[in-house]
Image (tube, rainbow over all chains, first blue to last red; front, side):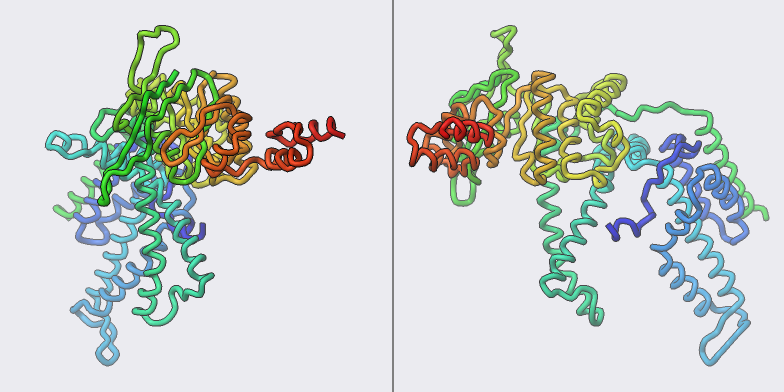
Length: 268
Length: 274
């Protein structure tokens, strides 16, 4: 269970707040719009409208702040690496220099900008996945992809595959831990030695994991068929939901934030 | 009633055709409890899939016959007429919460929302799973997961429920709990039960036991008749319940000692002997 507990990104945090009760499709569209806004911005200050909306969203969702902080942990290495590279390798006006190592004003600015970009992208994603159950999220993806079904894209099946993948993440993690324990008990040294040795040590874990996953997939396909599932056949939805007033508020807030970023970039 | 007439099933392999089942004749009356036993590879699971409509026989027929109107004869539709519960609960739960998983089959049946809500609620209530409605499956015990699988099948309102070694991965406590639940469903709702197992203690509740050996139905009789037939027991590779084995040992000394299938029967017979 230790492995499964360490990933917050993608985990649902059940609740009854307005953000939780909002439509998954609305939240998904808002998240995509905010992510576009994050990439549209060219200066750190232009992130302010998105940051304000995010702060309001996190506050209203009543999800503890530490949940979001934990969500940043998996990408901490990426953040540090990117920031360090920007600080030390961006050409510009030097403000500190030792031998060939040089910190520039432009490097610091760019590092701050990238840092904000990565943090905002992560926090927006965590807010979406924490406030939306996986099944609602996959339904939303299905709805979003629905227009593409007219050109032959199996949107409902894609959504179901995503849902099943999410359902099996904890199961596969438990299976991985079981295999690691089994191999360690037989004398395997996992994660020890240099990089090549460490990579090789994962082979005895990956092979049984793949074998059991294929077997599991086979069993699951039969079980789904036994419950009346047919690929391409129409299905009804258990989670029926109508557009609410707070859905409109979220969309308006997102439109305002995105417009703010675009206008700031164009005119200020 | 489900009727199997001369059902055979063969699969094509690189080494040629392999006959998995041969000329199976069976009748499963509505509301009855039946059991299928046999060694590994005898064709038990294939038979379960044929009865549930998941597989089509190579020859012969598997049909659902209506008791009310004997003219009504139809092929078995998977999930709708016969529900199938598999061995490993982890590999049959599809959704991320208990409630959504129970609704999965209903979504496939294209039922209206209100009816789905009603059926999901009823199934969770019947299985005593209301408090786990929002739980993700991985947070449940093996027995609870298997109950969720049964609830998912039950919500589709099948007339038969097949348990394909559904308790073999569970500990004794969970196994007993699942079996008690299944018997209660048979008793209260009149659902026909087919237990496919190699645990002979579980088949004692069945009115009829079928013994499969090398793809052939070697016996189709009451548990007592099947267990007392030494040829069938050896052919099916059956390891009889402890009480039955003890009874045979007693019969070596007291020839009129009865065949006892449960510890209670054995204790009673021993007391009478004393």
